[in-house]
Image (cartoon, rainbow, N blue to C red; front, side, top):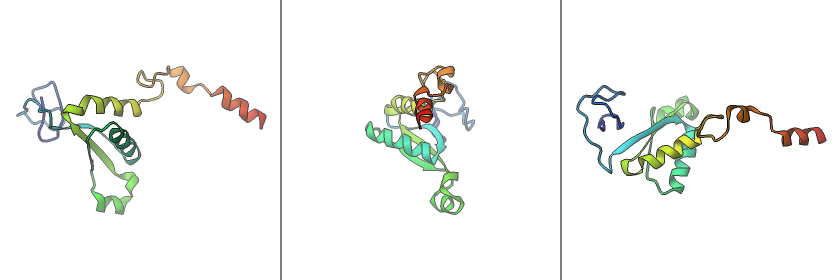
Length: 126
């Protein structure tokens, strides 16, 4: 089901984000919420979406004027893509923001926090 208010997909009859009860089936061109994140991650994800030909909308919570006053790094951006590209966009976002040691990262928790032996050897040589 699709919430027209907050653009979220859900299996439920009520939107878990805003509580709206009148949800409808999603259409191919409906803008769907992918994630909210800070400027650096949003820009990185948008760049990869562009490289993959995925149309998107990056919407700031504060707006440009307020972001300029408070500082752009404090702005939070929400990313939306058409439903027809949602799965691919979600996979891209999840793979870029995967935590070290998570399944998406491909490394075990031990590998993610092990020191890099080559880097240590180079430091010792210097």
